[in-house]
Image 1 (tube, helix red, strand yellow):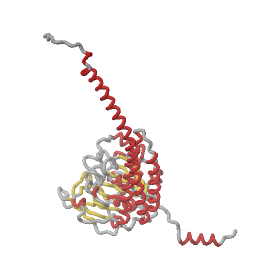
Image 2 (tube, helix red, strand yellow; image 1 turned 120 degrees about the vertical axis):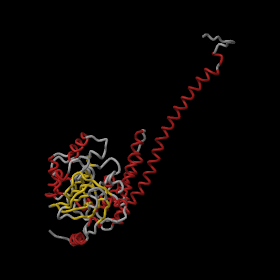
Image 3 (cartoon, rainbow, N blue to C red; image 1 turned 135 degrees about the vertical axis):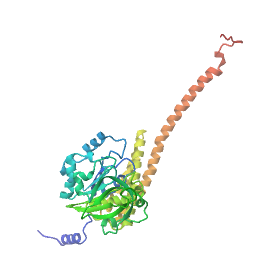
Image 4 (cartoon, rainbow, N blue to C red; image 1 turned 90 degrees about the vertical axis):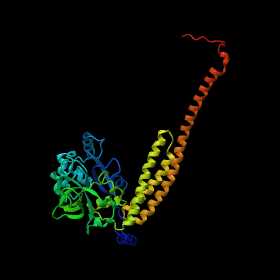
Amino acid sequence: MKITAFAIFAILILFYFPIAQSQSPVSVLYTGDPYPGHTPYIHMKVEPMLAVTPIQASRDHYAGISDSDIKRAIRIYMPRTYDDLIETYDVLIISDSNVGSFTSEQHAWFPQSVADDGMGLAMFGGHETFGAATGHPDWGKAPIGKALPIETIAGEYHDGKVEVQETDNVFMKSLPWRSDLDFLQNYASNLGVLREGAEMLAVDTIKSGRYAGYENPFYSTWKYQNGRTFAHTGDWTPGGGVVFLRWEYLPDFATNLMLYLSGRDIPEDLDLVHTVRSRFATLGYRRLIIDSLVDFVERFGANPKRVLDVIGEVDEARFEAQELYLELSFEEALDAVDNALGLMDQAEIVAEDVKNDALLWVYLTEWLSVSGTALIVGFLLWTLMVRRRLYREVKTTTFRG
């Protein structure tokens, strides 16, 4: 078989200038308290580098959920087998999940998935995780306890002042820590003891009570056989983490942590990546709003085709931006997502016009109904009160008691 000069040239081009490959999103199983309300899940949901499956497994986070609701969510959304777990997900989040929400078989999967198959694990604090509080069971006594970078202290949850440690940890170095950040000044956390071989990334010095002055591991991590685990002993949802949720870099914290636990590289240009992520988040939120508007228009029987056509252009531009972002071409991704946002501006104008057209018929129908009713009532009043010839005229009336 002859190899032409052109073929050789093409091979050399591919060798020296390889085509950029998109990395797949980190697949995350988020159990515990992903919703409702403002939680990190709403940021993770619109992040192209993450693909998150939420499962409600917290009994305290939302008063409107029952034990049967939790068990139903676990039954439907949790992987059916161990192989399904390790083949589908890269990272497991246990965020204020209750020990009692999972089966004994699932409890056995958690440490095995980290030790044998290299899954990442992150546990976040609250009344139901780590050593728990308010009577909930201690995760330290569950099988996953041995995989955590800390040993739990059962039933202890206290306020403290957080200090980020000097460290070469790539995750911590990827974020702009400052000692004056609001959420570091007072942060409640579950108490624990750092395991030998684990790395303390931040300390929460307890302010009062019998543990006053205790330097509690706030952020800690270690390598557990083939996988990485991370302990965040403070809550990161409303309640204990309400101030943390206001941090501008919360989305970067969540995304970079998932990259770290899955063994992926964390982007180095924080400012550029933060800007791109913020634009993607804005685009994602606006996309959800316009979907609601389309649903509103359809309920009134209007044709949303004009809106859907423009949304299709937005989605194409967003897909292109996401591909560039996943290829780590952040400057090109920023231009592409800005283009998608420009198309979204046009889509919102079209959607507003379609909505106004739909509401015009609503207003017209209401006007006809009100006007018709007024005409009928007016005619009846005119008939009864004005057309006096319909009444028999009398000169006197008689009152009978």
